Every structure is written in structure tokens, then in C-alpha cells.
Length: 242
Ligand code: FPP
Image 1: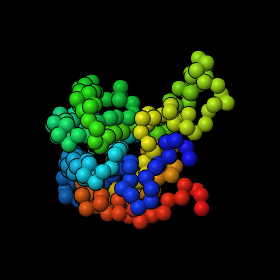
Image 2: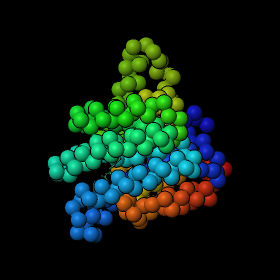
Image 3: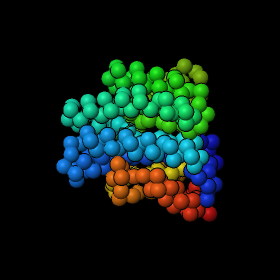
Image 4: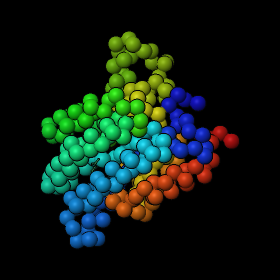
């Protein structure tokens, strides 16, 4: 089995959960509230989800917090999301330290507003010694862009003579992706009922179990996460074998 394939045996808690947090906008619209209130409620779901993952022994949690396509949203919404992210990090870093959570980020972080980048690096640095759950925020992230960056990185390594073309295989390529430090997700959750992957971890979810719930992200609570994990535990994973 390739080195970074998911490793949790069937019946166990997933080692790595990845979540497409969808439905903040609809949650707000249903209540006649501005979309930014939906994102704010979504941030509270993030807090709860991190707490539960830490409690049940998940090792890695990757959250799709802002996609490369999200830049196309109206400037007011993008600004609100960036302010929310900055405030969330500022406010929750102390809590993450207490909960032994190590924060990481993947994506084109250099495209985020300066203040956001600064806070992100500060939070990453301040939690870097923690040994519990690794929380990976996908920010300005797009899987196709990541794969293109990976191809460029492999080509550079060949050109500079660090590797030979014949050495290129899935394991080696995985080491040129943003996610090279983490195992592949075992479980992919998407909220709000949409049956799409939306350019999220396309390479890494090859063998992930997929769980889609109609719940909107702000309504996705501890029990919903535990139900998704229980559903995962009931499945029999074969990785293409019999
Ligand atoms: C999708 O809902 C959600 C997002 C685009 C952003 C996710 C952001 C958060 C959960 C809050 C902030 C995150 C952190 C880490 C503090 P949508 O707006 O696409 O919903 P819709 O499909 O109903 O319009």
C-alpha cells in the first residue's frame, strides 16, 4: 500500500477527517439574516467540531474554509470572511493551546490580506509544539492549482538532478503537494446535501469514504460529527482489493 494512503482500520475512528463546510449562506437566508451571520454561525460549528475531533481521537482535521473560487464572491462577503478568519484565530489560539491543537494551513496563503497572514502565522507558530489534533485550514485553496504546483515542483527536482524521471510514482508526487506532511483523509464530509467535491483534495481523497449530510454547516453539531464517524466505522474499506 502506498505510504500516504489512509491507514485507519475499518471500525476505528478516522485518523484524518476532511470537511467541505457548506450551507452558511442558506442558513442565513432561511432566517432573513445577512450571509456574514451565516459564516459567523459557521465559525461556531468549527469550534465545536475541533473540540469533538480532539475528544474522540481524530489526529488530523482539514477544513475547506476558503476556496480559490471564493475570491469571485462580492468583495463585501470576501472582506467579511477574512475579518472573521482573523478574529477567529485571534480569539481561539489560546483555546487551541489549551486543547493541545496544532494549527496548520494549506493553499495560496500569500493571497490573503496581510493582517490575516500575520495572524495565521502567529497562531501556527504559537501552536506548533502541540501534539494533539492537527487542524489544517484550507485557505485560498484549490486542488487543481495544488496539483499544478506539484507538477512544477517535480519538474524542478528533475531539472536540478535531485530525482530521476523514472522515480516519479504516486508516493513521490504526494511529497510535492501542500499536504505532504499529512496522511490522506479517511473520511470526507460535505454538509448541505450537495453531491460535489468542488476542487477539494482531489488527489488525496482517492480512497476516502464520503459522507454527505443535508444539514447546513451552522447546524452541524457534535452529534452529527459523531454520527458521521459511526457511519464510517460501519463501512468495510478495501482499497480496491477483495
Ligand atoms: C460555504 O457556505 C462556506 C464558506 C464559503 C466558508 C466557510 C467558512 C466558515 C465556516 C466560517 C469561517 C471559518 C473559519 C475557519 C473561522 P456558503 O456560503 O457557500 O453557503 P451557501 O452554499 O448556502 O451559499
